[in-house]
Length: 427
Image (cartoon, rainbow, N blue to C red; front, side, top):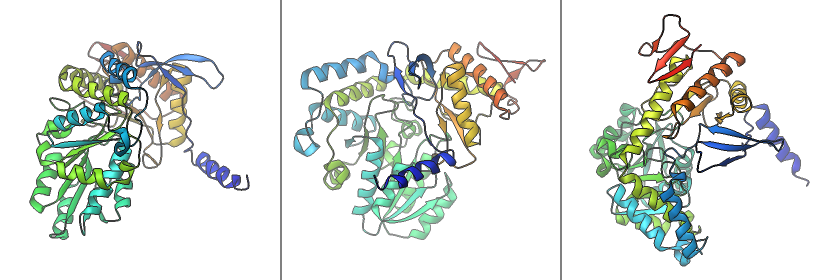
């Protein structure tokens, strides 16, 4: 092909910048999750432990969720049959939207094929329907939110990440024009949590709409899994709550929940909703089962938080550079693209532990990391093996260790640390 050289050059740039991505060929096992079968490039297979899955609570493996999918597929078939407007509004998807609206205490909800699409469609449509809208967007917002902002063509101001004073300054300067504050509740690369109550209060004071992405929090926070907004008691003060079905709920799809008129307007004006085939009924039924299940299972959220807490403390006690935050995300900083990829490769090749390296453009250059996501099914033995493997990799590659935080116990010899029944080799 005459144009092939352009694509080859583009890929070469990725390689030279250490940004070329290699996908691990994994086959999950419902019986042994978080273990999976790794299909190696040489054709051989190995059992590995996955430490970077977004199936945070293991709902993708839950018997009730799987049963709902199988039963629905057996009754109505594999596909949706069309867009929502052309035969694709199945009973399963209607039931799912009702459950999601109830989860967030909203009048209505609308399901999309992914969380990326729901942000793109909703943000661009809302801003497009508000005359003279000014979008106020957090500097650390996800790519899907940025693309929604761009697509809206509305004037946009970026406020410094989680900076309430800067946000208020921009709100004051905006005057009486329509304003839309766009932010996340939990930022997945750093694991930090937004001051949602304070942002909601500013929005109310200055007459702004609020749009929050709860993708990394739904199912996992709040009494019924409604996310950080439920935990903070401000769901009723946020105009639009966006979430995913592919992380805490373990299936596929994205959604928004809000006022019935707003949801109806997006349903009627968003091209990426109107012209996209609907979620298959079997997927919608599985997601619905997961939402219903997690509304009634705070114990799963407790187990998840416990696993994250122990993992963070065990890694930190071993002198590994864990980025502190208040969530379940466990970023271990490497700060070098080549070393980050090498660490990921060595964990997989030598220790059969899979953690995907996170490099630019997902994070800024110089902030490369391994992003670890514990689940309730990661045992103390899994955690011990993870820490020992990472200590070995850090030593082998010469990646700097840090001093363990003062609140963690290290014995007199400095070569052992303890945390809730886990004994791990430290630096």
